Amino acid sequence: MKRLASADVARRLQLAVALRGIGRQGGLMMVDDLRARRPGGRTRLVTERLRSAALEIVAESGIDGLQYEVLASRAQVGRATVYRRWPNRDDLFRDVLTHFAETTVQIENTGDIVRDLTTFLQSFAEASMTPAGRAVLQILLRRTDENDGLHHVGVELLDRRTGELQRRLDRATEAGQLPPAEAPFVNMMLIGPVQWFVLRRDRPFLPEDAQAIVELVVAGLWRDHVD
Image (tube, rainbow, N blue to C red; front, side, top):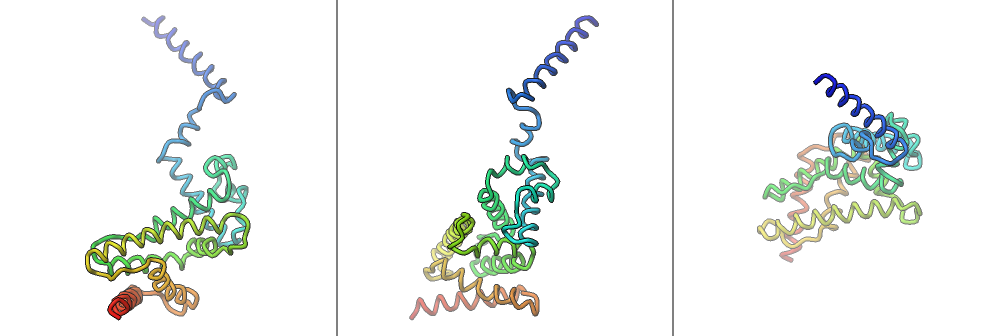
């Protein structure tokens, strides 16, 4: 029995050594590669750290300051880790923008359109006042004559978010809470006052401010519909 056990252990050790050698030559996917492809766990934490670091760098140094070498150093990972997740900067910005929007500025559907728009507006205001939010705004406000693709990445996000808002407005219209409304116009009417608050920074943007803006916009939509 002991001989069989010893032989079995020896075979396993030989197999491990062989696999390690093949893996180093690229013939097999090693444990680290499997972890990199597996959602959750350490991979998720590394990705979150990279996203946060990317926004910090943009907030501090602008869009041009975000280089992969700088990002890897800030997040304390190897450059290969960054390139493996995002082969180019457009992919990086697209992922960072989408994640930021989905996790900080959500469009809810509680059945009450005034409440949902108020929550949306308050979330947008709070996010806009953070360094990460200001970094995102830099990307979204990229000029159309910039030739690096970031403008298109920002437009993609805005179009997607506008579509989500439109679906929420349409459901409110079906429920009799709103007249038919175009999301781009509603979004502009809601966001404009918030940006004014953010630029002035003479006092915090309060939930009462968000509700007052939403109620005014909704009232204006109804009045325009009646007229």
